[in-house]
Length: 295
Image 1 (cartoon, rainbow, N blue to C red):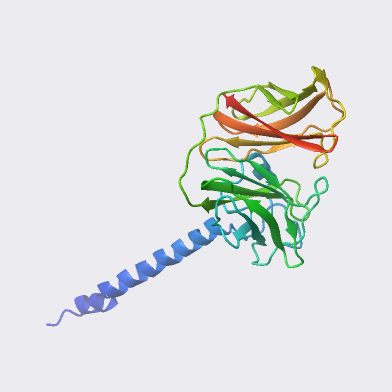
Image 2 (image 1 turned 120 degrees about the vertical axis):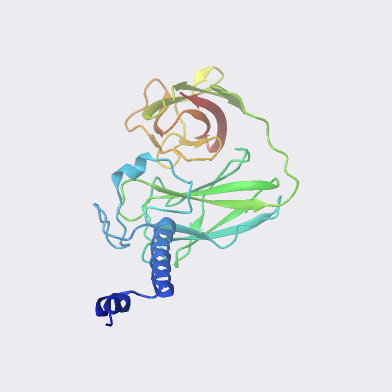
């Protein structure tokens, strides 16, 4: 007699190749979702919605270091080119896109600028702070010279729309040629340049908000009449050695105390950091550098 139960069971079984095909499609679909989220970020509604660009922002993001990725918090930095000839000026052009695929043109001003752009070589030499100009279509342009061959990192920091904390994106630039790495910097608290002496005080404490004081002196006297830069008496950039993570640094609000330019910095980890302080006096812009150790 024919065993109909066995026959029915075998009919319900899907062929092995079909099962494998379905499993592969599910895995591929999952990879596509994860890849999209990694590049552009999630587009689902976030706790805070800031309107016209369709971007949500989590306040905790402002405390994490930036510049480690080309895309973050729903924004994407897209350069026109990343290859330069060492020692030659070329126009560097880039656009910031939102998660809806459109160029961002709504940037809040900080000081008198809407885009904070700076470049440094991977060995933390050749620091440049530049001010690009935006076209009507959202394309930013800035003349850029990579003086020496090597790999560089470009940072774009901006405050989109009605966001309350800046977004910092980063992209690698290349200037082919024979690379000579700069010397390993030592921990320093004093810098001298063009008759100015700058001393920084405070401590970088890993996992905390650290307070930093910058004291600018000339002829052994405090300089108290500095010109404003981006709405403050000075501009401070802090990068972590190794991966060039850009720390969230902000000037302390209120009048200056003890002639110091005070800043607060979110220090994520222990390690060595490079600090670049810019100040302007009687129309002359100066940039001094320090190396600090966070414990």
